[in-house]
Image (cartoon, rainbow, N blue to C red):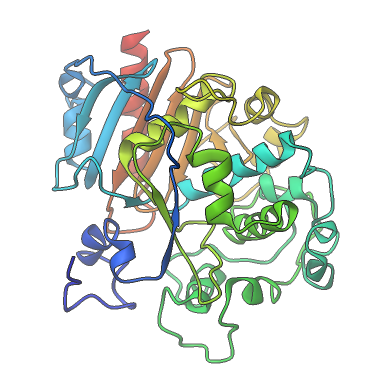
Length: 384
């Protein structure tokens, strides 16, 4: 696939370029393969339903919402059967699409599998796996702090600020042009420069760096780089139909917080784990049932920590656990979210897993996010 001549490191994450770039990351940035292995593909039988026509409050329909939210592909399944699957803007069923922060859930799922193997302990200090972190802002932080984004690290997630740490990280790994010459030029080098600004274990604060450190810790605990580790523990066990890929820096370290690319249906296969106590559609126990139960229940203070966090008003009564959003007071709905409109939606009582991959012009567009959640909620309610 030829790269558009006007695509640059400066503009690939902006409109109109991101629509192409999010479906062709491996054509212009370094990536590593996450193999699906040679096992069977988990079937997703077709049981068509006219969900696009479902009416929503305000006189719109599900199809209207998908049409108005820069959708590249969307799918709704119930108990593993496909009810509707659409690619309205040229994406193909086998196209790997950039997942942005849905990648975080995949890294956390690998962490859950390592916990199940006894190789990773949520309460352990990070420095017990990566000694270099003892000399960083993460000194004294635990794996649990990373999983729930409750460290005290100073890290700005202001996507529209080119000097926010979330954007400086991209400069360090080669995803953006360097405007700060003295930045480290690797992922791990950059993470070691981050400073602590508050006690670890405080309120929830969304920071992408937490997942990058978690990926580092997982690699150290397993003695394996993430592409092979994720293949072994996750991608080869869910019955994936295609390999995934992950963006990497010059040392081969993955962009763990947002660099994984996968096709639409394989994300259904991931989401199903939250319906089936960690068992894949091929019958394999991918993560322990206890890990899924912990994700759904949270810790004793998870909801209080979420309520005390910044920018959490859109999900009153919700929480964040193991790199998943639980937007409502109960455990009925689980969300895996990424900027520019990436989502896995799981409604447990309805047996629904839905996925939407998008190319929103802006990183965060709350109206599009909430309209999509409302549409999937309405589908789940109708199916129940």
